[in-house]
Image (cartoon, rainbow, N blue to C red; front, side):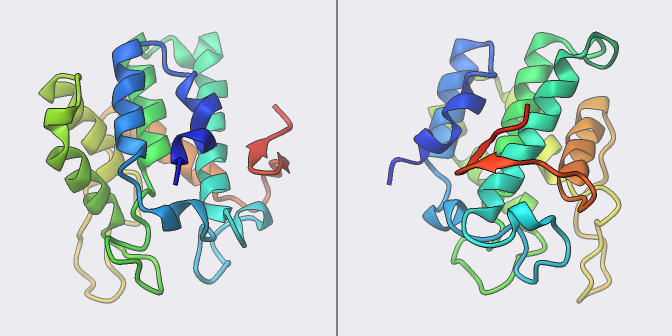
Length: 194
C-alpha cells in the first residue's frame, strides 16, 4: 500500500528536505490499518468527521492543519524556529500511528504514543536527522496525550506529560482536533475549509 499519497500535502509543509525524506521513511512504517480505522473505537471522544472509515487519518490531518495554520501566524509561530516547526508537523502526522498497537487490537492501545516512539527509535539509523532531533520528535509524540497520562485500567501514570513548548503545542493541536465543537470539513480525506 502506498501510504505516502495520503500525506502529500502535509509532507510539503516540511521545509527541510532531509526531514521530508525522514518523514516519508517513517510514514512508510505505519500499519495499513491506520489509514482505514476511525479515530476512536467508541466514537465518543472525537467529532463526526473522524468517526468511521479513515477517521483516524482525518483526525491526524486536522491536527496537522491546525498546527500548520497556527505556526504560520506570526504572533503564535514566532516562538518556534523552522526546525521545531518541522518536527511539530512530523510529530502530529505520526502521533497516533499505532493507535491499535503493533498487532491491531480491537480497541485503542493506551500506550500507543510509546509504540510510535519505539518504532522511530528502532528505525533511527534509516533517518538523516540527528539523534537529538529524533529524541525531540519522540518526546513530542510520547507526551501528546497531555493530562490523560494515566492508564484507566491500571490507574498507573504511563505516559509523560508535555514539558517543552513544542511538546505542549503538539498536545494542544491534537486536543483541539478532537473537540466536537470544531467543525472541520473534508473532501474525501483532505481538509477542505482552510
